[in-house]
Amino acid sequence: MEKTQWYLIETEDEYEKALSRYDEVKHSAKGSEEHKEKMLLVHLISEYEKSFRIDVQVDPVEVIKIRMEDFGYKPADLAQVYGDKGTVSKVLNYKQALSLSMIRKFSQLLRIPAELLIPEYSLKGVRQR
Image (tube, rainbow, N blue to C red):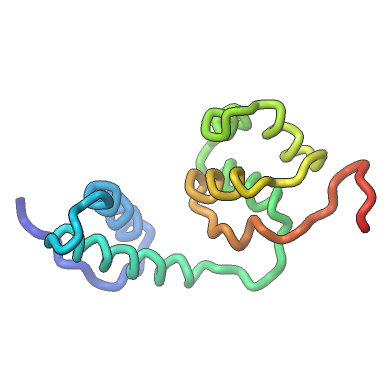
């Protein structure tokens, strides 16, 4: 297999290829060539994702809904990852806050930086202190 030469990621296609390759080498042994490639890919992917970070404070639930639409996901898809359809429904309808576990799982599934899911937001029918 021919070894890919990696450069700065500048397009969505390059980003997808880097993510795909990362999935192939993510469990490589420390010190191996694949491990070195994995570390480079982590850096390149992270730098590319930084270029899309938004400084505007966006409601975490809206971020989730936007990414669900981007990927064509339904609430049931999130429930498969999280394990509880009722809780996912409550979160998407602003009746329950995101838990740390949900933030971690949804961040990975929807490729959303966790820091976009952490900010507090208002819930329906719940008084803020």
